[in-house]
Length: 159
Image 1 (cartoon, rainbow, N blue to C red):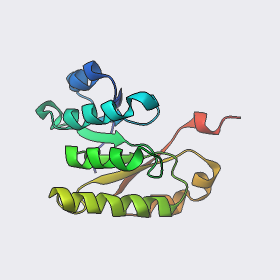
Image 2: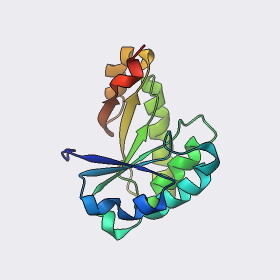
Image 3: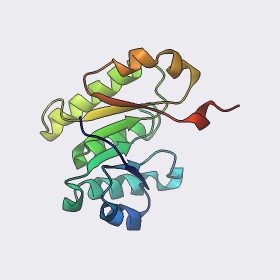
């Protein structure tokens, strides 16, 4: 497993940042299609991220895409653009259960097959952002051999 000493978050709707983030040489760059992008910019951000994923300048940097929830109006389209663009890792927000990971894994496998990518190539990160996610953290973390990390943020649990 590759060390992630640094991860640079890049809003998916910012072309300037998408086209230059590699100059900082982070271990990982996370192209954000979720919270950093307003609803009216989701479609254009998805297209920008798709093209950024294909830039040769990112070939030595782990490319992570934080998609919207699968059951949102944006989630499956985000996932398709990320997989077809060549993302190394998909970060699923608001993961509450192992079933969320199983569903994501099924969709990733389908898209890998459709796009000619090797099955199992795309890794997963689960973002645990709720009490349900915390209770189910072990089941989430072990739900798939594709899992490379579980993300927790303290501000998600403040009252």
